[in-house]
Length: 427
Picture 1 (cartoon, rainbow, N blue to C red):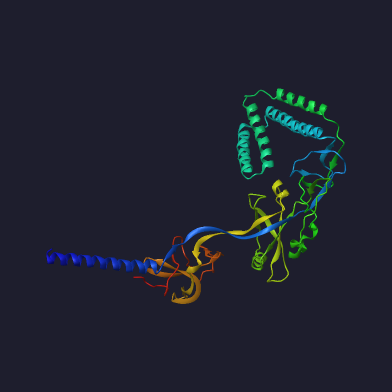
Picture 2: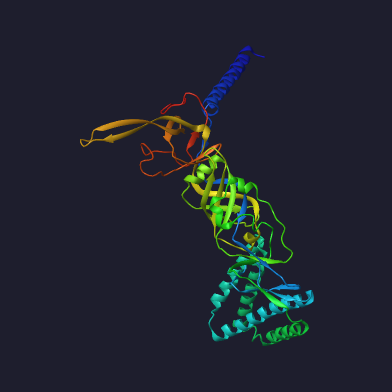
């Protein structure tokens, strides 16, 4: 090979290696030495996790007569004081026949109401169509969230709305034959059913449920404000009497009681707004609640927190103990790694009456942001913090920021690096 050609090839190869090395140094200087993360918008919820115990104002209803019960009300249904809860029959066949008769009676009455309202013209087609759409959505939601009692009720209302539309549009003339058939079935059931031996009534108004778990009297509802952590730890289930017919929740307000750490107790003590409670099984939706009490033997000890609620459904009626999540508000802002936070000085320029500038400096908490090749220090206002990240306010209230400047969406925040300062230029 010609020596001159060999030298040219060697020089070109060395030059290429030198360029690769320089490029490597530049990349290392700008990226490896100063890795960045974009400030992105997030929404976070401040949460406390615990195991809950539910305390309600529960009145047990007893059945002192022999026989089989046929309930007159559904679980979760509101009842009046002195209202009928169930009928007592001699045998199960009579009780089943009575239950079926009452269901058919409700269907007959629904058809009669539909026919009466449609003929009188009190409903328009738009209202009927909207009812069908609305109830269909509710039915799907209740089915997906396993609220089966609500879903059954939704299905009945949806069927009534569809029947009403059929009658309104003329696809069905009337429901006379269906009503007559239902009445015939009801009469047959009445003829085959023995007389009731009696009825069971409730002394208290409230929400009825057949379900009793043995914790109804574990703690005095009226003394809930004074509950201690020791009380909570000694709750024990008792046996349910054989003659129990159900119970009535006689006060719409009920309480969630749970243990929290000393730090969590402090957060709850200074939290002045409502919270939410999300149960693991009883409800798929967060339930609004207020912080009623935080009882603590000392400021460094664990505490028992009492949350007061007034939302009720059949799932809540049967819940007693399960894991919960307490939500203390949502925070929307820019997410920044805790590793990126530093203390440095920011400058504020003010002007006097003669328009002369005056500069002031103050040491604040902030982050270093890379703009091109220049490093700038920006003050931050933290809304929320977890173990790794903070959420920063993009528009803090007046006076929070010393010079009025903070980070913006998609800023390149430097999360690691030595010898950082405001105005540094990275070559």
